[in-house]
Image 1: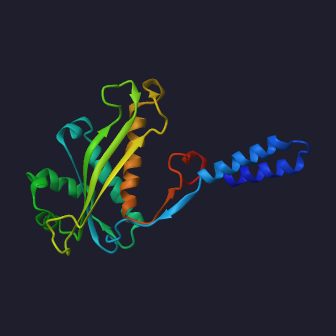
Image 2: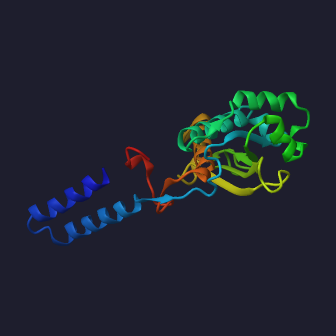
Image 3: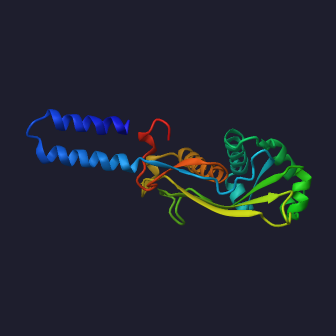
Length: 227
């Protein structure tokens, strides 16, 4: 779509006589907009999930889970679905099985990682520990300013030591992109859904090659048919 607009602007410049600086300014602006919409290929941070069985395990503190009771389920399902779709040969353990194991295993999050991966009987665990999940800035419920941050650790059954992360990453996302969005301009569900979608995407991106905006702060996903 952006390419079409840019070409159209050039045609106008050729066909409309005397347009001068205005057309040149318009074409320059279109070229800049096109540049801002560019996406670049980014390789996986960790490519060791290929042809492995994987469990996606989500943890958070009780306060966050009490306020957002479906948070862990949504994140584990969303990340698991993307991994199953994008990572070659991966076998993702059913999120419902993982959640049942968490509910029926007292103090599962205090277990040594080696015992955890043996209990789930998989080759890899992607452990997502959510530290922050909020929809408003601290102390101001009248503005939408969502943030989600987490540590993502990978446990390897065949690693040098199973009781430590083979690799660990930190992911922080925010939503919406509009600054100072007041409470009447969007619903809580839309902000929560948007924030979760961003977090799930950026977390899953750690594990497979993908396209990211070249200029994240300038990129407008609504312009592209396939963001």
